[in-house]
Image (cartoon, rainbow, N blue to C red; front, side, top):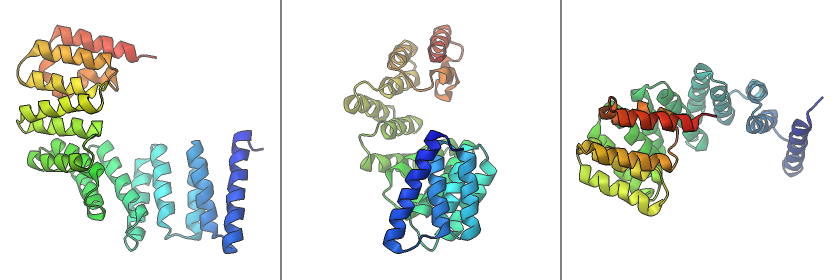
Length: 270
């Protein structure tokens, strides 16, 4: 028996398929499986969605969109090996189209490589995305982060600035730019960038957090702690990981910081 929620999705899919059939006369069976798989994916029914992807691929093994959906579903199930294999197949079949499915496949491979901290591989995939869209600010920002991990500071500055040209009011893009400037020894530019976050996102936690990093770089521990406290008050993401931030390594033995980090972590506990 279907649950009421699943029954509703099945009825909606039937309605969609019926409408499509009335327009085109028929629907490819692989398309039917993709529609069902997509609906199940959105419901969080990942194993059932994966099974629908496999059924669709039995009908049409070169369907790049189904391979992408299989990659997303396997990723949600934590099977990175299967996800990587599916995205790789999507790239193989998507090369001739160079459309959205090819971009999704490269992005999926980049995310997996980032999760596994395989920075060179992640960089290759993000560069593939820029080949498809050279002005994509998100890809430039991601490349800046990866280049920081690889110690490619000049490249990181280039990509961070390119990202800011197209997404100059985006909080995460600005935060990345500020961190890149700091790594490049441009503390003044970093400070201006973090201050700008406060102008475009007034209640943001990343603005004072970044200014705390600048103060720490200047050797002003008291100011750094004050800015970090302000950032915590504004609800930093993942406060339980504050003590693990490599950018705050200079405070690893500071009792005030350790107390601050402990309190932040406690506030995140359910």
